[in-house]
Length: 114
Length: 110
Image (tube, rainbow over all chains, first blue to last red; front, side):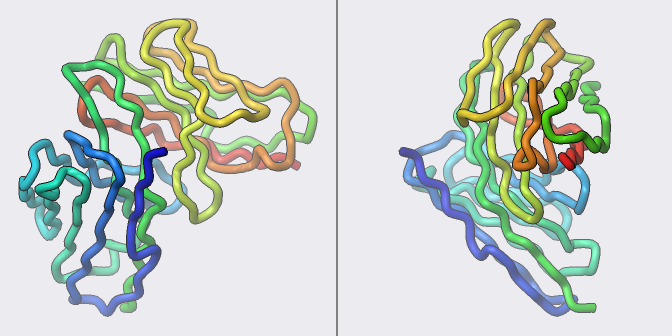
């Protein structure tokens, strides 16, 4: 079956440091989504990637869609305390509105030392 | 704009009691709908997804069931709750690439 690996599982970093996390899959996808979840809330979409090789930024966040379409990474620059949370990758196949079974990585729990 | 509503936000239910969690989406039509469960500090486990009215796919055999009586309504149910049903339940929708989540329901079975 399809395998999705997200790493690292957790990170403790100093405020101001850069953070990097990634996901790899055994299957090819045409979309990679990255979410952040704060405690007790639903995940919020951070970045969506649609093309292999695509590099997209959203403020201090940068994500890339791997050229093989089997991986993606998310970088956070100059981390701040509000970056604390769980980050999930979610690769997806979608074709013009047809169903896409949305699966998630196991998450990267980010804790920032003040 | 599209919005997703999920309720209740928290629920405490005794073992053996029934369950009904509701999720509705506004501002779109024919969305794909999903139910996930999340154990504390863990990943998102896909329980059910639906591509249309009356169409339900189950990912994990369990004590729960789902129904989609209307295009933008998705219901998660159980006839008799187990202690192991406790968790954080999330509803999500998409219509293509990007998916969006409700605020979640914290279910505690006692």
